[in-house]
Length: 92
Image 1 (cartoon, rainbow, N blue to C red):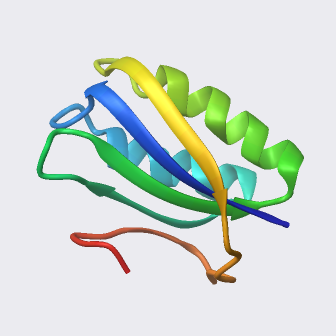
Image 2: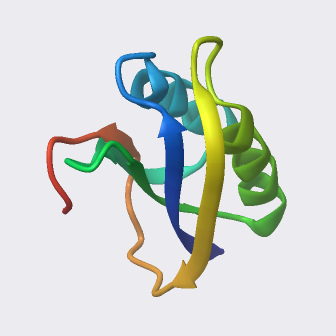
């Protein structure tokens, strides 16, 4: 099990990025959360086996149909043992 803190930059607000992220996370068994940052970025904390996190990160680089992802930054963090994946208004 691994924990990643992920920041997605680009046109990622108003394009269903968070809702789509939740759908993909649920499909892959990724747990954590996603939220919109005030500066226009999307912030994600994700936990899963490394193989599923790699697939999840690949998707984050593409995003949903109308998103324009310019960059995805990720770094490993401390495991928080999330129970599921949620769309939230502010950091947990």
